[in-house]
Image 1 (tube, rainbow, N blue to C red):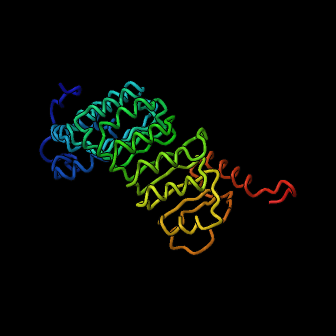
Image 2 (image 1 turned 90 degrees about the vertical axis):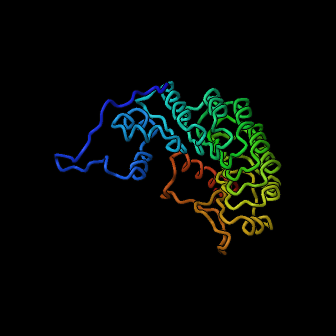
Length: 304
């Protein structure tokens, strides 16, 4: 039983006020337009407009991608209900799902138990602090085809990383940016290196990593093309490691640097701070300044 009622009637024929008749658009174009709406707008509004839009809403291919960002006018319980309905509508065709902030162990279990689990390619759960290591480890056992996962700004530990690596052998993208430094040196690096050999894109900013940890990643992830180490503490790239890093990885974001560097570039990767840079957030700007100041400040002379 569908939780949303079918529209009672639809407009037919030519428009009498000179506006375009949307019903005369090709179905493929109408589908493309509707897919640009949010999940909430499709389920709660657009599907009620006319029979054509209703039939598109009912098409499982409409739900190959689900992207949900919470809004103030919806409660968490309402968002969960909408998300579950969208997953159900996909009927096994869901390929990518992104849930920001409100995902929990229960919702993750619902996704993992759905018909789409075995075909899911991308799972993004940024800022979902309610997800536990136990919940994620159980879910990824049922998601063997995952190629991308984003668990940035969560409370998940290295145990979750190892479970992801072991259960998702096709994983190519991992985003695990953190908000606080809670790990011992190289814990995250070693977990990634020993379980994710197919990684091409890796973001692990704001963790503790030494040269040994970076070498482990380069050894364990030979396919790596993009590496974000922004705000990572403990690296010393003054020797041969820097040369190997630039030769092996095409695109790198290093601590204290403000730009993306291509391995073909020959100029020096130095420490710099630009107070007028276009920062992603105020927290990011302050974090970069603290690190720059800590590294460059000579406490014996008071000079930078």
